[in-house]
Length: 275
Length: 282
Image (cartoon, rainbow over all chains, first blue to last red; front, side, top):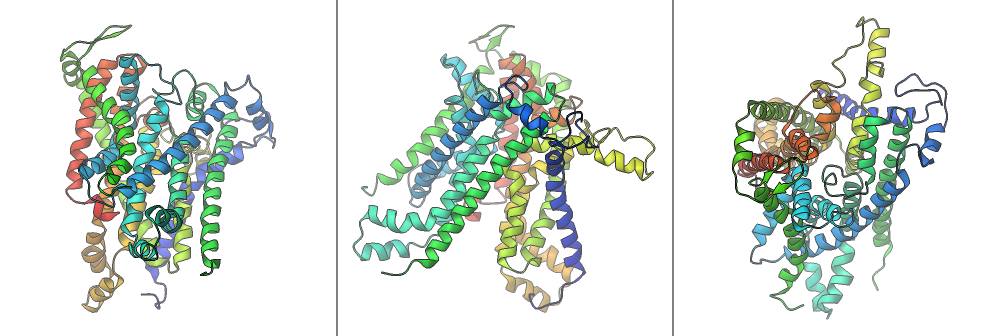
């Protein structure tokens, strides 16, 4: 197939793909542009001058509720969720390499965690806390709610990773006299490290942007997505777009950091010389 | 770690978290769906009134029907678009690096905020939005099109926008696993492009389509933010109905509704799992 000349099918599909990318990024870029709207400008085009007025507005406390606080909470929750997701998914991935009683049930429970609608998880955790007489907070109930969303992704990724993992490396290490722990730390972990970065990235971005599962579980303090959603009903200035631009930038930074980490690992592995 | 016990210790954290934050909450929903309530509180009880009220109302049935309509339309759109995009990436992009770069480009928006992605349609579709302004300037329409934003059209568009990647990824995964020799064999046996597509590629892409469908169907079925925001409160869905009952503190009613949704979701997923063994596809 490779040596052939590109046919009509290629150009038609390439054009379709280009449109698809435009569909994905077009709307996002309009709000990035509009966030630099002039001081007198509104929520739609035309641009009424160019300014950073709305970004400044964002950092003035009174204007848009509790941006700073909710931002800090979302970041903290994101980091907590990321670390827990990586650790728990890795352990579960290792467990699923062997047969154990209840492994099928646990696997389908993980899948269920993915397919049960978020609003149900939110309602359920909210009710469970209420029935138990415990106040929901972002670092208890919302943390758990986020894990029900990030863990299935993490576990399924680890599942895929270990499906393709050759036990030959471990056997070689053990033949050379490595203990179980040494084999894990010096052989298994370096090989799967890039995938763990991927799991971490999913954990962070999914938690940082999570809305529906947080709705009934965050308690008295909002996370950033809840704050943004609240703003959509009562804020009619481009400060909303400025907030959108800032939070999108945070997501992009997380993605870039993950990419840099994975590339660095790949490069390091290439330059490693046998002892 | 001693051999036999190890997998149990390793699986324990996952089991504990999902037990505490998924199974227990779902049990709480089922329990509360039989409880009684008034305007201030909910009371432990065993009544079936919540179900009778929910399932006995024609509004509920209409809402479920409307939700299934969204499911069907969004599923059809994302399947076709998802397949075409995945097909292009898998069969027409020749270098692996380029494949990864283009796939990453598709993935990035999925890792940003859903709410921001929804809001970002407003300046484009609004009454004075980019699309309307352009259409009027070109003389295609005399007045702004009202149905673009805060309508069911907008809901479907936003859902397709938000969820299409859940279809692209598994189909791409399936297509990448197809042995290229099979395509050659089909061609050597005299199949034309269309026949190869319908007799070889699509059947082999079925597991991917099934997994993508599980994602899209369950996401649309439970969605309430997109419906509320993009329809401007003019459309209904089951998720939104539950969210509204929650905001009115009618928890037992919301719970009864939630149990119905749960049964519906589990039935649909079970049906789709008959087509595909997820453990083998990963």
